[in-house]
Image 1 (tube, rainbow over the protein chains, first blue to last red):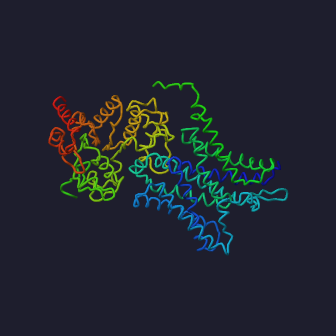
Image 2: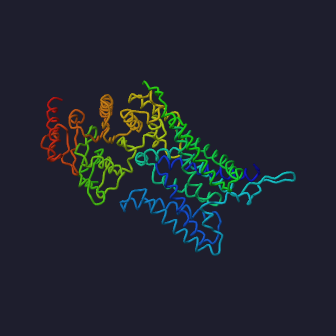
Image 3: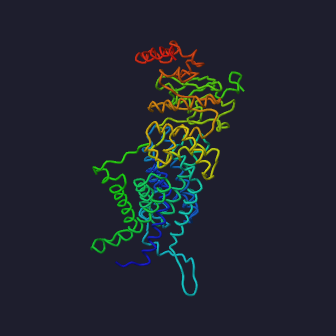
Length: 306
Length: 259
């Protein structure tokens, strides 16, 4: 196995991205809105395209703005269709995100003639190429320290998510557990809802370029879902899902070296990272405290006596 | 200010209509709940009992009309009301402990962004003590029985230190000991001058539990002190010709004499 600095950089970007996704993902999972992550990560595409067509640049600020607006619109449209169309929420989400995604594809084809905004890149990402675009953070005569540019963008997003969750932890917890109470206490659950949707949208865009939407969808849901099998304590759950996210990146990148060793065709890092996350979920499902193995055992649970 | 709804009433409802997709659930509800009553809201399934509470709290949109809390709209009087929703309204698999849930009742006084400190936890623990399950404080909420979950909800309302308590079916599917504990707590609140509104469906206990009664079936059929309102005629008007229910009514009316 030839392990290089590139692998380290890929793990850095993948791990940061996975952690940035796992944070809002935890609250999506708890609000039983896991598919909203899927929906938003697709629906931001027209936001990106329109932002590009209007501004004519791929500057991050425009992309983030376009994506955030598209993300909020997805949540808003879904709510409207559910309420006025008498359609079940899952179906409403399906209608909104496929339509927006399709509009996005059309717009990107339209813009693609004169720009390197590429549909395939949006879907699969280009994790392998992130080490090609480096930023030097620190340099003197004897040494220098450089990281992939994507790591900076995603690191900033992770920091943003950490700050938002730290600031609104109590409010997120309340709005996710009992929106009715949140409302009567004056904590505006609708505001919390759209804040969460904005976090998902912004995270998705930050991750797009580097890792593509497939890994975003996986990382929004799989690490929190895995953690949910292992603990029923919210702070622990958040920490465990961050650990699962990082482990997926590390083990996934290691695993991506294995198929070529066996003479199989090459594989993509982001694909392997997402697959590894799924594999970790499987392990938790089998061997976790409430896992399949435990359930199959004949040993009686020790009853609680109050 | 409307003359028929003077501000001394903890809850005054005027001309309230609520509809889901054009189908009215509540129709032109007029109601004054006097201070210091332990009031039951009683009526058949689908009569709009829960909807009445939710509409007063702005949890669902009103088609017309208004609900006033001591003469002012609810959004200016949030501090005065504690709401206990139906138990099924939340996900009991949520990864938090009983103490966490009760602590949520202190959030309003705490305000945005502020961290939970020892004093909030202490308050929550005292409330759990009051409802008799402080030994379960650290337990994850899915590990609690139905009755214990209802007690957690009640404790959460207690820490809100409100003037008016809105309870949606607090006695639904709880064990007899819990039912007794809850009614004793409600009576204790009542004796301190608090107003309690309670959606209830067990006619057999109405006259024992409540001193004020609102009979509801889309409209307010009758409201007033239980001794005057809980009559065969009013119940028949509320429940219509539902025969199997009328047997319950007969049974309940027999109990009136005994209590």
